[in-house]
Image (cartoon, rainbow, N blue to C red; front, side):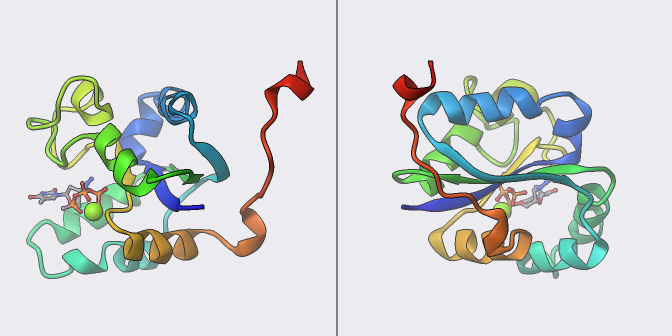
Length: 147
Ligand code: ABT
Ligand code: MG
């Protein structure tokens, strides 16, 4: 089953959006298979955003993502990598459509609430960068058994 790495960034945590964001992916029909509230070290931030090392905003990006706790998650389901990116909306909140997470809750590109892996290769890389095998849970859902 396809997996992706999603993360509520420090601005989303500060603005009490963890629950809202988790709920959107749950309601969509995806399954949460790993999650933790954590501080990102400077080293992890530089590795995570390695592709942007030469960009002028790299320093700001690293200081923002390390500025407070993030909520790191792994979600699973059909086409979750692509669909999660659609649900997040465009990188720049100015271009993000209403109804998307960034379109609904953010204003500036430097503080755009959520990160999501942008390809199968980055999903694989980012899931492994943030989670150990033992932190990912495999379980069946059968709502009728639990009510
Ligand atoms: P991330 O999920 O954070 O990776 O964003 P996304 O993949 O949608 O967009 P990319 B291109 O990866 O941007 C990474 C972070 O860099 C910020 N950024 C980007 C700027 O601050 N200025 C810019 O001109 C661009 C292109 C936005 C993203 N993160 N934050 N926070
Ligand atoms: Mg990106």
